[in-house]
Length: 145
Image 1: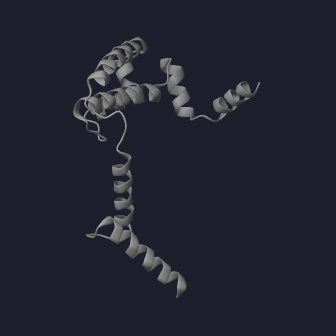
Image 2: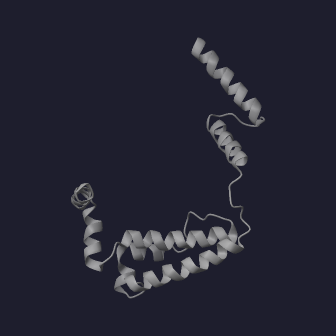
């Protein structure tokens, strides 16, 4: 019952324009858009070890999202499923052959985040330890006076 109530609430509160497009085309275009985008990004990460936020195929993605790619026959639900299945199979091969590490270097992640926070707070051109100590001292002095 709880799941059904949650589903009814979702139907009532969901974006009406998105619901209209889903009724018109028979599937969720925003979901399809993100599926195509994420599969492409996964391939790029595994082959180039690079994340491209600004998509070279942005116009194609928009045409999926707004329905024109479905209307002109470029994409259909069946083509979407076929594409996703093929990409998933190829992605499994890419993962096996990837030179990327299985886990992130957490020390490097930590240091990078610290550097970003410190830089955001206007502390530059010093070693990480010096930056942290200096900022800590400044903060404590400001609190006292």
